[in-house]
Structure formats: C-alpha cells, structure tokens
Image (cartoon, rainbow over all chains, first blue to last red; front, side, top):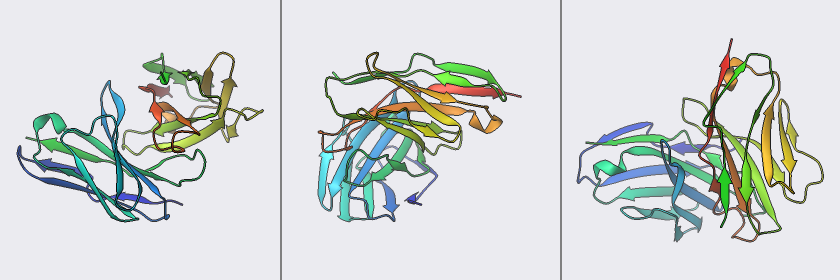
Length: 113
Length: 117
C-alpha cells in the first residue's frame, strides 16, 4: 500500500512564524500535491510538483512556497504565517501514468494564533 | 469551465439500507476520469472508486458502485448495505487525461453522510 506521511497531525504556530509542513511518500510517485481544506470551500490546490525541483502553482499559492529536493519529499512553507492560514493541510501523491487516484496523508491541522 | 457539483450537503441513511450520493460534472473534454473519496472524522482522504469516461460498464468496488450516466454528466456513488463506519464526508472529483494526467483534479464540496443505527 502507498504510504503518505505528514510530519505533524496538529500544529500551533504564532503569527509571523516561518512554518514547514513536511510530506513523504514511499511509492516512487512523480506527482505530489499540497491542498488546504476549509469548511464550505472544499479542497483547494496550493502547489503541486511533477518532478524533483519542479513545481507549479495551484489555485491559491499566495503566502506559500514549496520545496522538492528529493522525489519522496515535498515540503510546504509558510514564510510568515497569518491567522487566515489556519486550516487543514493535506498532502497527496500519485504516479504520472494515466488518470490515477491521489493517495493522501492523514492531514495536518494548523492553527495560527 | 470544469466543474463538479454535489447538491446534497448532508444525507441520512438507516444502517443496512442503500444510499445514493449525487455528483454531476461539467467538462468539454472527451477523456476524463471520475473519482470518489471518503473522509472520516479522522481527516484522511480515502480513495473509493474510479470511472473512466470511456468505460462501458459502471465501476464497482465491494459495497461501492458508481452509477455513471455520461449523457446526463452524472456519476453518483451508491453505497449498499450501509454500515455505521460509512458515516463520513464524501467527495467527488474529476481529472482530465490531457491536463498533465491527473495533476489537477476538480473537486466537489462534498456530502456529509450519517448512518443511523
């Protein structure tokens, strides 16, 4: 089974802090994704990566950056956390072939105070 | 524009009964795939079932089946013999074959299903 692991289940940070959310997958998938999920807004794509060091903006990239130095790891960075970034963050991965389902991690619930 | 619509914010079903969760989609692409995911209160998104636009038969996976009506652009999820553990949010999503494969899925807002004992 594909395993996607997010480093933290719950995280509390202060406004202005730099925040790193880490995600690791163990199935050699080319694609990795970061979503945020808010009530009533569904899943919104922040960034995705289709190869090492490659990234593309999703629908809501403002205030975020990403890093993919190794194929199995995709990091989401909040350069200066703000309260409106309080949310559930979901990482996912998928292979590059065809239309394949995304495999998700357990999510990180981030609270910015 | 690509769009997924789930018209039922919340649904209730009695244990052991069947339930249908609605999903309609809008696309002009001839090649696409439709997915259903389950999200329990624990937060993890679990892939349930997939239907390709060219698949002749409706997809089935255990108690899950997908009622795919291409002309109506609907891909409803049917859960048979509901169990208490089926209580969760259910999301419908669409991916296009010609958009960098499945790099950007279009998601519905979800349906909350509660199974009553």
